Image 1 (cartoon, rainbow, N blue to C red):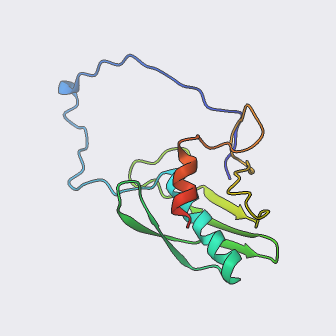
Image 2 (image 1 turned 60 degrees about the horizontal axis):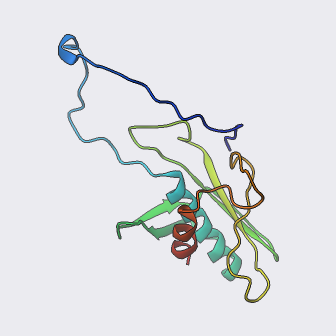
Length: 149
């Protein structure tokens, strides 16, 4: 997994004049779609949940995207034990890759105490966190929680 000491927000004032870019390559077809880290984390969480419940991790897992479309992800790795299950999905950023392209996005699930609900904990490579607990954005938590079911 990729990790780091944090992310810097960069702002650039750019003024492009494309009239001099006659040799600029323009794709003759649409760019191949990629997936967000959150979609990969949701897929890994769903696969790990299924593995914990059934004792066997699926090779393919399907999730629902926020817009309602359903997509499938190949599960790249899994570990299933009596107390926890881990699954991983390799991020494919499509034809517009970022630094997380090719990263193995993993999720580990464990049964909690009855009535404890879903608790997110940071894992290896999750990035910085000002407090203990989940290192994903609060807006991502409901998506992972609901779509992992």
